[in-house]
Image (cartoon, one colour):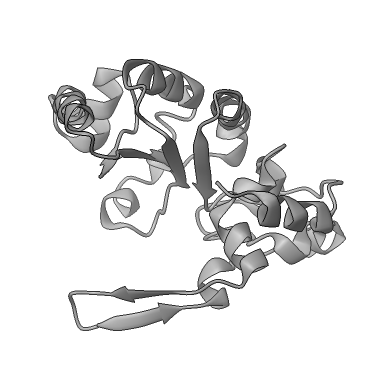
Length: 212
């Protein structure tokens, strides 16, 4: 079972979901799932309202629900209907960089698994091998999704995992395994990106050696 918890602060979760009882209801559902032995994974959309407390979220959730084993962060997709109507929710990459690192470090030390989507590798610090897009690029993975509308069955390959990049990315050793910046120049600024000094081969090796 996947649950979306964007903030362990009730007022923030309420604003983001439009439901004052959202967090309380989710906690009740998670408690019941835990009693029944149901696997629960936590999804969090990174946005301007929770960018400053991502590590608090995981500490509170893992402490309250010790059966949790897997967390996923998705950087906000501004093309989704609700997000497109409220562009103020789109976070600056710098705004969540430190908190994301703290959250990933805490989960790693606790032996818990996690993935991150739509975040360029220059903002993944010590954990580029936990990028969903990078893992798919390294493993050359694809997937099939059946949509219930006119799109029907679609197969997503490499093009689904790569976005735009500015020229400076060509100077970065991680360029071959980095997906780039989603909605570059529209909602997210390429000016925030900068080359790092980690080798692409070390990331490939970490992905292949990571069974999580």
